[in-house]
Length: 422
Image 1 (spheres, helix red, strand yellow):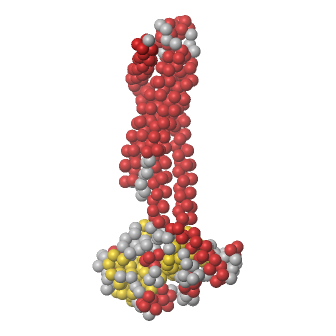
Image 2: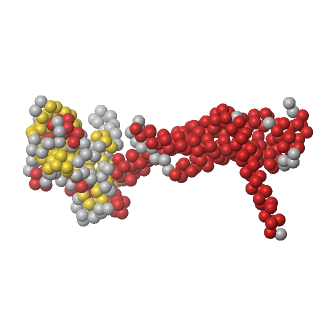
Image 3: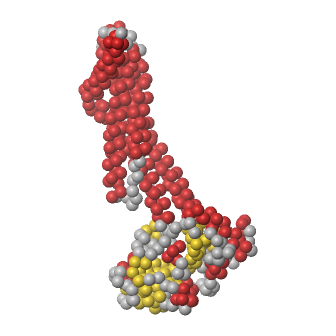
């Protein structure tokens, strides 16, 4: 009973192997047609993989850039403005934030979940050093600025609270400014002119590169009082353009957000519906940027997926042609005892091979593109194993689905009609 029970199983294995061998021979015999059919699947899979990879890479880069702006960051911006002539300005155009607001938020009894506060006033001003000139962003702030913005000093030091109180003419500059204005990074102790005011460089910031906010190394940071009283053109020396806030930790970010909002609403005597300021969390900025790139990724991936649909139609067309060309072969095999199931399986395996091999080639092309494209674009291409496996699975499904109709058509042919065919 044992050998008799094992014999059918061995026959099934042989039948499948024979089916695979016959399918391979059929595709190898028609090399050019098979290659052109697989080319459509190859291009479609590679296009979808690279499109999704570019989108994920862009999302990661934007997230990393925003995270580099500061740890557990909250950004308080002024509200909108309306001129005397009735012209309205956008958010941030008013001067509703002052040093008093920053002092209030730095009070631990008012906002215990806030770790540090850095008020900022800034403007694009002309710089002069000897015969060199440069235009850069000049930032007036307090000694808390490096901690809040997650910046460090490479050479020298940052200014102190005493220097802010004394309106000291000192500055810490970024590496782009140092290179463009002073010709290198040996800058500590040198004097530059900022909007006509001579200041001494006491520190050089570590490089941060470019982010969504522009070149983070092209700036000059001076004490807030020095900026307000010697460089700014504002009529109110205590006004600030932005207040950067660092929560004590990631878990305290939501509480710090609520404390900031409530404190400023009470201080300004306004309600939430008429607030003259806006508080943005770092996470909300990340979510907005990620949502935008995700929408673009889905849109572009949908367009790329159309090529997969076209490739599936191409596989179906080729398989229909193959059935037509091989009618006599089908009739002969049926006459020799091949069942409709065997014929159906034969053509399904051929279509599946086209999809699988095309998918493997598309996967290879996608991985090659992921390695080469970052040399030509400004962000990486992130190919995940899940996306690669999904692409391979989709190519196999395309082959199977596209082969169902031609295979069923071949299986329904009557042997006598097939043998009569010319």
